[in-house]
Image (cartoon, rainbow, N blue to C red):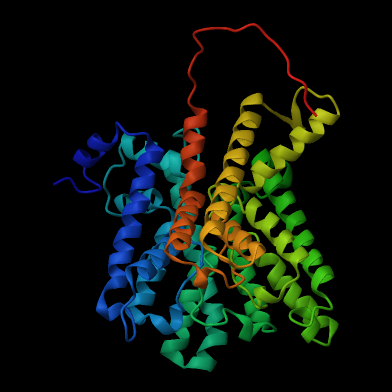
Length: 449
Protein backbone atom coordinates (compact mmCIF):
# COMPACT_ATOMS: atom_id res chain seq x y z
CA UNK A 1 0.00 0.00 0.00
CA UNK A 2 1.34 3.45 -0.95
CA UNK A 3 0.83 6.12 1.69
CA UNK A 4 0.02 9.72 0.56
CA UNK A 5 3.44 11.06 1.60
CA UNK A 6 5.54 8.07 0.47
CA UNK A 7 7.82 8.19 -2.61
CA UNK A 8 5.86 5.31 -4.12
CA UNK A 9 2.66 7.33 -3.99
CA UNK A 10 4.27 10.30 -5.72
CA UNK A 11 5.80 8.09 -8.43
CA UNK A 12 2.35 6.70 -9.22
CA UNK A 13 0.61 10.06 -9.26
CA UNK A 14 3.31 12.08 -11.03
CA UNK A 15 1.95 10.90 -14.38
CA UNK A 16 -1.29 12.78 -13.69
CA UNK A 17 -1.45 16.57 -14.14
CA UNK A 18 -0.71 18.20 -10.75
CA UNK A 19 -4.10 19.97 -10.56
CA UNK A 20 -5.84 16.65 -11.17
CA UNK A 21 -3.94 15.12 -8.25
CA UNK A 22 -4.79 18.10 -6.05
CA UNK A 23 -8.45 17.74 -6.98
CA UNK A 24 -8.35 14.05 -6.05
CA UNK A 25 -6.73 14.90 -2.73
CA UNK A 26 -9.41 17.46 -1.95
CA UNK A 27 -12.11 14.97 -2.98
CA UNK A 28 -10.54 12.37 -0.71
CA UNK A 29 -10.55 14.83 2.19
CA UNK A 30 -14.23 15.56 1.56
CA UNK A 31 -15.06 11.84 1.65
CA UNK A 32 -13.08 11.29 4.86
CA UNK A 33 -14.79 14.30 6.42
CA UNK A 34 -18.23 13.02 5.43
CA UNK A 35 -17.46 9.60 6.93
CA UNK A 36 -16.35 11.26 10.18
CA UNK A 37 -19.48 13.44 10.36
CA UNK A 38 -21.64 10.36 9.73
CA UNK A 39 -20.38 8.68 12.90
CA UNK A 40 -23.04 8.36 15.66
CA UNK A 41 -21.04 10.42 18.15
CA UNK A 42 -20.60 13.29 15.69
CA UNK A 43 -24.23 14.47 15.98
CA UNK A 44 -26.62 15.17 18.80
CA UNK A 45 -29.64 12.86 18.63
CA UNK A 46 -30.27 11.62 15.11
CA UNK A 47 -27.03 11.10 13.13
CA UNK A 48 -26.52 13.21 10.04
CA UNK A 49 -27.77 11.76 6.78
CA UNK A 50 -25.28 11.02 4.01
CA UNK A 51 -26.52 14.07 2.16
CA UNK A 52 -26.04 16.32 5.19
CA UNK A 53 -22.61 14.87 6.02
CA UNK A 54 -21.32 15.18 2.44
CA UNK A 55 -22.68 18.71 2.04
CA UNK A 56 -21.17 19.88 5.34
CA UNK A 57 -17.80 18.25 4.63
CA UNK A 58 -17.63 19.80 1.16
CA UNK A 59 -18.60 23.20 2.52
CA UNK A 60 -15.88 22.94 5.20
CA UNK A 61 -13.09 21.73 2.90
CA UNK A 62 -13.93 24.40 0.32
CA UNK A 63 -14.18 26.97 3.17
CA UNK A 64 -17.60 28.05 1.94
CA UNK A 65 -19.89 28.07 4.98
CA UNK A 66 -23.17 27.08 3.35
CA UNK A 67 -24.98 24.57 5.53
CA UNK A 68 -28.08 22.40 5.50
CA UNK A 69 -27.92 21.85 9.28
CA UNK A 70 -27.08 24.14 12.19
CA UNK A 71 -23.45 23.39 13.05
CA UNK A 72 -23.71 24.45 16.68
CA UNK A 73 -26.87 22.55 17.64
CA UNK A 74 -26.70 19.53 15.32
CA UNK A 75 -23.08 18.44 15.86
CA UNK A 76 -21.38 17.43 19.08
CA UNK A 77 -17.96 18.72 20.10
CA UNK A 78 -16.42 15.91 18.03
CA UNK A 79 -18.47 16.86 14.97
CA UNK A 80 -17.59 20.54 15.37
CA UNK A 81 -13.92 19.59 15.73
CA UNK A 82 -14.11 17.60 12.48
CA UNK A 83 -15.62 20.63 10.72
CA UNK A 84 -12.88 22.87 12.12
CA UNK A 85 -10.08 20.52 11.00
CA UNK A 86 -11.58 20.36 7.51
CA UNK A 87 -11.75 24.16 7.42
CA UNK A 88 -8.09 24.50 8.45
CA UNK A 89 -6.85 21.91 5.96
CA UNK A 90 -9.01 23.26 3.15
CA UNK A 91 -8.05 26.87 3.79
CA UNK A 92 -4.35 26.28 4.28
CA UNK A 93 -4.15 23.84 1.37
CA UNK A 94 -3.41 20.14 1.50
CA UNK A 95 0.00 20.32 -0.15
CA UNK A 96 1.04 23.30 1.96
CA UNK A 97 0.07 21.36 5.08
CA UNK A 98 1.87 18.23 3.87
CA UNK A 99 5.08 20.16 3.17
CA UNK A 100 4.87 21.78 6.60
CA UNK A 101 4.61 18.33 8.21
CA UNK A 102 7.58 17.04 6.20
CA UNK A 103 9.63 20.10 7.13
CA UNK A 104 8.82 19.81 10.84
CA UNK A 105 9.76 16.10 10.77
CA UNK A 106 13.06 16.95 9.09
CA UNK A 107 12.20 14.96 5.95
CA UNK A 108 13.30 16.11 2.50
CA UNK A 109 10.73 17.67 0.15
CA UNK A 110 11.21 16.08 -3.26
CA UNK A 111 10.72 17.52 -6.72
CA UNK A 112 7.34 15.83 -7.19
CA UNK A 113 5.98 17.33 -3.98
CA UNK A 114 7.26 20.75 -5.08
CA UNK A 115 5.45 20.38 -8.39
CA UNK A 116 2.12 19.93 -6.61
CA UNK A 117 2.93 22.67 -4.10
CA UNK A 118 3.75 25.06 -6.94
CA UNK A 119 0.38 24.37 -8.54
CA UNK A 120 -1.52 24.75 -5.27
CA UNK A 121 0.19 28.07 -4.51
CA UNK A 122 -0.32 29.17 -8.12
CA UNK A 123 3.37 29.83 -8.66
CA UNK A 124 5.31 29.70 -11.93
CA UNK A 125 8.65 28.48 -10.55
CA UNK A 126 10.16 26.46 -7.72
CA UNK A 127 12.14 29.39 -6.36
CA UNK A 128 11.59 30.11 -2.66
CA UNK A 129 8.62 27.73 -2.36
CA UNK A 130 9.70 26.40 1.03
CA UNK A 131 10.40 29.92 2.29
CA UNK A 132 6.89 30.93 1.23
CA UNK A 133 5.42 27.93 3.04
CA UNK A 134 7.22 28.86 6.25
CA UNK A 135 5.97 32.42 5.98
CA UNK A 136 2.45 31.12 5.43
CA UNK A 137 2.76 29.09 8.63
CA UNK A 138 3.93 32.16 10.58
CA UNK A 139 1.04 34.27 9.28
CA UNK A 140 -1.50 31.55 10.06
CA UNK A 141 -0.23 30.93 13.60
CA UNK A 142 0.13 34.60 14.53
CA UNK A 143 -3.25 35.66 13.14
CA UNK A 144 -5.24 32.73 14.49
CA UNK A 145 -3.67 32.84 17.96
CA UNK A 146 -4.21 36.61 18.17
CA UNK A 147 -7.80 36.14 17.00
CA UNK A 148 -8.44 33.45 19.62
CA UNK A 149 -7.08 35.62 22.44
CA UNK A 150 -9.11 38.69 21.43
CA UNK A 151 -12.34 36.78 20.77
CA UNK A 152 -12.02 35.07 24.15
CA UNK A 153 -12.74 38.46 25.76
CA UNK A 154 -16.16 38.29 24.09
CA UNK A 155 -17.13 34.63 24.38
CA UNK A 156 -15.64 33.60 27.74
CA UNK A 157 -17.77 36.06 29.75
CA UNK A 158 -20.87 34.87 27.85
CA UNK A 159 -20.29 31.10 27.91
CA UNK A 160 -17.75 30.37 30.62
CA UNK A 161 -14.06 29.47 30.31
CA UNK A 162 -14.16 26.21 28.34
CA UNK A 163 -17.18 26.77 26.12
CA UNK A 164 -16.16 30.39 25.56
CA UNK A 165 -12.61 29.40 24.62
CA UNK A 166 -13.95 26.83 22.14
CA UNK A 167 -16.19 29.47 20.61
CA UNK A 168 -13.16 31.75 20.24
CA UNK A 169 -11.05 29.01 18.64
CA UNK A 170 -13.78 27.97 16.21
CA UNK A 171 -14.69 31.46 15.05
CA UNK A 172 -11.08 32.67 14.80
CA UNK A 173 -10.05 29.76 12.56
CA UNK A 174 -13.27 29.99 10.57
CA UNK A 175 -12.74 33.73 10.05
CA UNK A 176 -9.09 33.56 9.01
CA UNK A 177 -9.88 30.81 6.52
CA UNK A 178 -12.83 32.81 5.16
CA UNK A 179 -15.14 29.88 5.92
CA UNK A 180 -18.11 31.70 7.44
CA UNK A 181 -19.05 28.77 9.69
CA UNK A 182 -20.51 29.80 13.03
CA UNK A 183 -21.74 27.88 16.06
CA UNK A 184 -24.74 30.20 16.40
CA UNK A 185 -28.01 29.61 14.58
CA UNK A 186 -28.17 33.28 13.53
CA UNK A 187 -24.43 33.41 12.71
CA UNK A 188 -23.07 36.57 14.40
CA UNK A 189 -26.30 38.58 14.46
CA UNK A 190 -26.23 38.61 18.25
CA UNK A 191 -22.98 40.58 18.17
CA UNK A 192 -23.92 43.15 15.56
CA UNK A 193 -22.65 46.08 17.68
CA UNK A 194 -19.83 44.35 19.58
CA UNK A 195 -16.61 46.32 18.89
CA UNK A 196 -14.27 43.33 19.20
CA UNK A 197 -16.33 41.20 16.81
CA UNK A 198 -16.57 44.07 14.33
CA UNK A 199 -12.80 44.58 14.34
CA UNK A 200 -11.23 41.15 14.90
CA UNK A 201 -13.40 39.02 12.60
CA UNK A 202 -13.03 41.39 9.59
CA UNK A 203 -9.28 41.75 10.23
CA UNK A 204 -8.88 37.97 10.18
CA UNK A 205 -10.77 37.33 6.96
CA UNK A 206 -9.25 40.33 5.17
CA UNK A 207 -5.71 39.14 5.97
CA UNK A 208 -6.62 35.60 4.98
CA UNK A 209 -8.38 36.81 1.83
CA UNK A 210 -5.73 39.04 0.29
CA UNK A 211 -3.44 36.07 -0.33
CA UNK A 212 -0.28 34.68 1.20
CA UNK A 213 1.80 36.11 -1.64
CA UNK A 214 0.73 39.63 -0.63
CA UNK A 215 1.33 39.10 3.09
CA UNK A 216 4.76 37.63 2.32
CA UNK A 217 5.63 40.60 0.14
CA UNK A 218 4.53 43.07 2.84
CA UNK A 219 6.51 41.25 5.53
CA UNK A 220 9.69 41.29 3.45
CA UNK A 221 9.72 44.72 1.83
CA UNK A 222 7.48 47.02 3.92
CA UNK A 223 7.73 49.86 1.39
CA UNK A 224 5.10 50.62 -1.22
CA UNK A 225 7.57 51.33 -4.03
CA UNK A 226 9.27 47.95 -3.50
CA UNK A 227 6.07 45.91 -3.62
CA UNK A 228 5.42 43.73 -6.65
CA UNK A 229 2.76 44.67 -9.17
CA UNK A 230 0.54 41.89 -7.83
CA UNK A 231 0.72 43.26 -4.28
CA UNK A 232 0.02 46.83 -5.36
CA UNK A 233 -3.00 45.83 -7.42
CA UNK A 234 -4.36 43.57 -4.68
CA UNK A 235 -4.08 46.20 -1.95
CA UNK A 236 -5.47 49.05 -4.04
CA UNK A 237 -8.39 47.17 -5.59
CA UNK A 238 -9.24 45.36 -2.34
CA UNK A 239 -9.52 48.74 -0.61
CA UNK A 240 -11.72 50.06 -3.44
CA UNK A 241 -14.00 47.01 -3.27
CA UNK A 242 -14.29 47.32 0.51
CA UNK A 243 -15.31 50.98 0.25
CA UNK A 244 -17.75 50.17 -2.55
CA UNK A 245 -19.39 47.28 -0.67
CA UNK A 246 -19.69 49.11 2.66
CA UNK A 247 -20.98 52.37 1.17
CA UNK A 248 -23.21 50.53 -1.30
CA UNK A 249 -24.81 48.38 1.38
CA UNK A 250 -25.43 51.40 3.61
CA UNK A 251 -26.98 53.41 0.77
CA UNK A 252 -29.24 50.60 -0.45
CA UNK A 253 -30.38 49.30 2.95
CA UNK A 254 -30.44 52.47 5.06
CA UNK A 255 -34.24 52.62 5.38
CA UNK A 256 -35.03 48.91 4.90
CA UNK A 257 -36.93 47.85 8.06
CA UNK A 258 -35.72 44.26 7.65
CA UNK A 259 -32.04 45.27 7.78
CA UNK A 260 -30.56 48.68 8.66
CA UNK A 261 -33.94 50.37 9.04
CA UNK A 262 -34.54 48.55 12.33
CA UNK A 263 -31.72 50.54 13.94
CA UNK A 264 -32.25 54.14 15.00
CA UNK A 265 -28.83 55.72 15.36
CA UNK A 266 -26.43 56.50 12.55
CA UNK A 267 -23.60 54.80 14.47
CA UNK A 268 -25.56 51.53 14.67
CA UNK A 269 -26.35 51.56 10.95
CA UNK A 270 -22.76 52.32 10.01
CA UNK A 271 -21.46 49.57 12.30
CA UNK A 272 -23.75 46.99 10.72
CA UNK A 273 -22.86 48.25 7.22
CA UNK A 274 -19.15 48.03 8.01
CA UNK A 275 -19.26 44.36 8.96
CA UNK A 276 -21.72 43.22 6.31
CA UNK A 277 -20.01 45.10 3.53
CA UNK A 278 -16.60 43.67 4.44
CA UNK A 279 -17.73 40.06 4.73
CA UNK A 280 -19.53 39.92 1.39
CA UNK A 281 -16.74 39.02 -1.03
CA UNK A 282 -15.10 36.19 0.87
CA UNK A 283 -16.02 35.35 4.44
CA UNK A 284 -19.75 34.63 4.59
CA UNK A 285 -20.39 35.79 8.16
CA UNK A 286 -23.45 37.92 8.67
CA UNK A 287 -24.87 40.17 11.35
CA UNK A 288 -27.86 41.08 9.18
CA UNK A 289 -30.62 38.75 7.93
CA UNK A 290 -29.75 38.12 4.27
CA UNK A 291 -33.31 37.14 3.39
CA UNK A 292 -34.41 40.70 4.15
CA UNK A 293 -32.07 42.61 1.83
CA UNK A 294 -33.40 44.33 -1.29
CA UNK A 295 -33.02 42.70 -4.69
CA UNK A 296 -30.60 45.43 -5.75
CA UNK A 297 -28.41 44.68 -2.74
CA UNK A 298 -28.53 40.97 -3.53
CA UNK A 299 -27.31 41.67 -7.07
CA UNK A 300 -24.49 43.85 -5.75
CA UNK A 301 -23.50 41.11 -3.32
CA UNK A 302 -23.55 38.53 -6.12
CA UNK A 303 -21.12 40.58 -8.18
CA UNK A 304 -18.79 40.95 -5.18
CA UNK A 305 -18.98 37.23 -4.36
CA UNK A 306 -18.19 36.38 -7.97
CA UNK A 307 -15.03 38.52 -7.82
CA UNK A 308 -13.91 36.97 -4.53
CA UNK A 309 -10.53 37.47 -2.87
CA UNK A 310 -6.86 37.18 -3.72
CA UNK A 311 -4.87 34.50 -5.48
CA UNK A 312 -3.24 31.91 -3.16
CA UNK A 313 -5.60 32.97 -0.38
CA UNK A 314 -8.31 31.27 1.63
CA UNK A 315 -10.96 33.04 -0.46
CA UNK A 316 -12.73 31.96 -3.65
CA UNK A 317 -14.25 33.65 -6.71
CA UNK A 318 -12.52 34.49 -9.97
CA UNK A 319 -10.02 36.48 -7.86
CA UNK A 320 -9.40 40.21 -7.61
CA UNK A 321 -6.44 40.17 -10.00
CA UNK A 322 -8.59 38.49 -12.66
CA UNK A 323 -11.14 41.27 -12.27
CA UNK A 324 -8.39 43.89 -12.49
CA UNK A 325 -6.95 42.45 -15.70
CA UNK A 326 -10.43 42.44 -17.25
CA UNK A 327 -10.78 46.14 -16.41
CA UNK A 328 -7.30 46.94 -17.72
CA UNK A 329 -8.01 45.06 -20.96
CA UNK A 330 -11.23 47.03 -21.41
CA UNK A 331 -9.45 50.34 -20.85
CA UNK A 332 -6.64 49.34 -23.21
CA UNK A 333 -9.14 48.44 -25.93
CA UNK A 334 -10.98 51.77 -25.79
CA UNK A 335 -7.69 53.68 -25.67
CA UNK A 336 -6.39 51.56 -28.57
CA UNK A 337 -3.35 50.38 -26.68
CA UNK A 338 -1.71 47.08 -27.71
CA UNK A 339 -0.53 46.31 -24.15
CA UNK A 340 -1.89 46.56 -20.61
CA UNK A 341 -0.09 48.90 -18.21
CA UNK A 342 -0.25 49.38 -14.44
CA UNK A 343 2.23 51.01 -12.03
CA UNK A 344 4.92 51.23 -14.70
CA UNK A 345 4.64 47.56 -15.63
CA UNK A 346 3.02 45.82 -18.59
CA UNK A 347 1.04 42.59 -18.85
CA UNK A 348 1.36 40.25 -21.79
CA UNK A 349 -1.20 38.69 -24.09
CA UNK A 350 -0.94 35.36 -22.26
CA UNK A 351 -2.30 36.82 -19.02
CA UNK A 352 -5.23 38.40 -20.85
CA UNK A 353 -6.11 35.15 -22.64
CA UNK A 354 -5.96 33.20 -19.39
CA UNK A 355 -8.16 35.73 -17.61
CA UNK A 356 -10.72 35.70 -20.41
CA UNK A 357 -10.86 31.89 -20.38
CA UNK A 358 -11.18 31.69 -16.60
CA UNK A 359 -13.92 34.32 -16.57
CA UNK A 360 -15.96 32.73 -19.36
CA UNK A 361 -15.74 29.26 -17.83
CA UNK A 362 -16.70 30.66 -14.41
CA UNK A 363 -19.76 32.38 -15.88
CA UNK A 364 -20.73 29.15 -17.65
CA UNK A 365 -20.41 27.16 -14.42
CA UNK A 366 -22.57 29.61 -12.48
CA UNK A 367 -25.20 29.93 -15.21
CA UNK A 368 -25.33 26.17 -15.77
CA UNK A 369 -25.77 25.54 -12.05
CA UNK A 370 -28.56 28.12 -11.77
CA UNK A 371 -30.33 26.56 -14.75
CA UNK A 372 -30.05 23.03 -13.34
CA UNK A 373 -31.31 23.98 -9.89
CA UNK A 374 -34.19 25.95 -11.41
CA UNK A 375 -35.41 22.80 -13.15
CA UNK A 376 -36.14 21.01 -9.88
CA UNK A 377 -36.80 23.85 -7.47
CA UNK A 378 -39.70 26.30 -7.55
CA UNK A 379 -38.19 28.84 -5.15
CA UNK A 380 -37.48 32.48 -5.86
CA UNK A 381 -35.09 32.73 -8.83
CA UNK A 382 -32.93 35.44 -7.24
CA UNK A 383 -32.54 33.35 -4.09
CA UNK A 384 -31.35 30.38 -6.15
CA UNK A 385 -28.93 32.53 -8.15
CA UNK A 386 -27.64 34.03 -4.89
CA UNK A 387 -26.95 30.57 -3.39
CA UNK A 388 -25.14 29.36 -6.51
CA UNK A 389 -22.97 32.47 -6.70
CA UNK A 390 -22.20 32.20 -3.01
CA UNK A 391 -21.20 28.55 -3.52
CA UNK A 392 -18.93 29.34 -6.48
CA UNK A 393 -17.27 32.19 -4.61
CA UNK A 394 -16.96 29.90 -1.55
CA UNK A 395 -18.51 32.74 0.44
CA UNK A 396 -21.35 31.09 2.34
CA UNK A 397 -23.91 33.90 2.52
CA UNK A 398 -27.42 32.52 2.13
CA UNK A 399 -30.92 33.87 1.62
CA UNK A 400 -32.39 30.65 3.02
CA UNK A 401 -32.69 28.58 -0.17
CA UNK A 402 -29.91 26.09 0.65
CA UNK A 403 -31.88 24.32 3.36
CA UNK A 404 -34.86 23.90 1.02
CA UNK A 405 -32.97 22.29 -1.87
CA UNK A 406 -33.77 18.74 -2.94
CA UNK A 407 -31.16 16.06 -3.59
CA UNK A 408 -30.36 17.35 -7.08
CA UNK A 409 -30.03 20.90 -5.81
CA UNK A 410 -27.68 19.85 -3.03
CA UNK A 411 -25.54 17.86 -5.47
CA UNK A 412 -25.28 20.89 -7.75
CA UNK A 413 -24.24 23.16 -4.88
CA UNK A 414 -21.68 20.58 -3.72
CA UNK A 415 -20.19 20.44 -7.22
CA UNK A 416 -20.14 24.23 -7.55
CA UNK A 417 -18.41 24.63 -4.16
CA UNK A 418 -15.80 22.08 -5.19
CA UNK A 419 -15.19 23.77 -8.55
CA UNK A 420 -14.98 27.14 -6.83
CA UNK A 421 -12.18 25.82 -4.60
CA UNK A 422 -10.09 23.72 -7.01
CA UNK A 423 -11.36 24.75 -10.46
CA UNK A 424 -9.17 27.83 -10.99
CA UNK A 425 -6.06 25.77 -10.19
CA UNK A 426 -6.98 23.12 -12.74
CA UNK A 427 -7.92 25.67 -15.38
CA UNK A 428 -4.76 27.65 -14.79
CA UNK A 429 -2.61 24.57 -15.36
CA UNK A 430 -4.22 23.53 -18.60
CA UNK A 431 -4.39 27.08 -19.93
CA UNK A 432 -0.70 27.56 -19.18
CA UNK A 433 0.26 24.44 -21.16
CA UNK A 434 1.63 25.48 -24.52
CA UNK A 435 1.11 23.31 -27.58
CA UNK A 436 3.00 24.59 -30.64
CA UNK A 437 0.68 24.85 -33.66
CA UNK A 438 1.46 22.52 -36.53
CA UNK A 439 -0.53 24.46 -39.11
CA UNK A 440 -0.82 28.19 -39.67
CA UNK A 441 -4.09 29.43 -41.15
CA UNK A 442 -4.59 32.61 -43.19
CA UNK A 443 -5.89 35.57 -41.21
CA UNK A 444 -9.51 36.64 -41.50
CA UNK A 445 -11.97 38.80 -39.57
CA UNK A 446 -15.41 38.75 -38.01
CA UNK A 447 -17.60 41.74 -37.22
CA UNK A 448 -18.07 42.49 -33.52
CA UNK A 449 -20.29 44.81 -31.55
